[in-house]
Amino acid sequence: MGKKDREERVKERESYVEKHQKQKTKYKLIALGVFGGIIAVLAISSYNFYELTTVVTPKGVPLGAGPIGGIHIHAGLLTMIYGQMFDYSTPAYQIKSPYISFQKDNGETVHMLAANVTMGYFFDSLHIGLTNKCFIFPDKRQFCSDDKYTLKFYVNHQQIPSLLKYVFNNNDRILISYGNENETQINDQLARVDSFKLLT
Image (tube, rainbow, N blue to C red; front, side, top):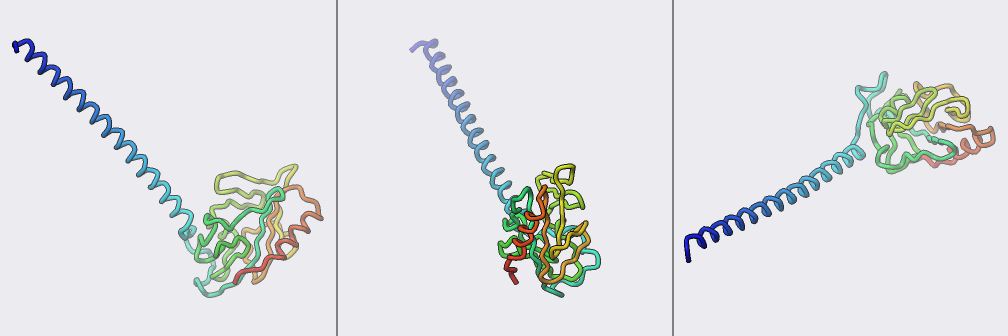
C-alpha cells in the first residue's frame, strides 16, 4: 500500500467521521427541538389549567364587604345574548372569588359568602367586563347597546338601569339580556330564570 493510498484512506475516514458527527449533531438538534416543544406545550397546558381552576380574587377586598363566611345566600342568574344562554358552568367561571362565585359546575346559582358584595365585583372576578351598556367576554368580544340591540338588566322581573352596584338578596332572580327581544320574549327569559332550582 503506497503513501497515496494511505492518505486517501485517512481522508475517507476523516470524511466519514465528519459526516457521522454532522448527522449525530443534526439528530441531537431535532431531539432537542422536539423535547423543547413538548416542554412548551406542557407549560402552556399547566398554566391554562391553573388559570381555569384556581381561585383568582380581584385586587383587594370588595368595598364594604363583610367577613368571608359571614353569610351564605343565593341568587339565580341568567345571561342571554341574542337569545342564547351564556354558559357559566365551565371551569373558567367556577369559584373565582372566595366572596362570591358559581360553584359545583353549576352556572345558574350565584353564592354570596360575605355581606355587601356587588355584582360589579362578581363580574370582575370572572374577567367579564360589565358596564351599563356593554357585556364584554373574556376574549374581548363586546355586546353593547346601539340602535338595533340593547343590554337590559332585570331583578325579580323589574328592569333596572345597572347591575354594577347591586347587592342581591337571597333567592333573587337576575336576568341580563342582550338583543332586540320583544316583551313576550323577555317574559320567556324571566320565566326561565324563575325556574332555576338554586343550589345551596
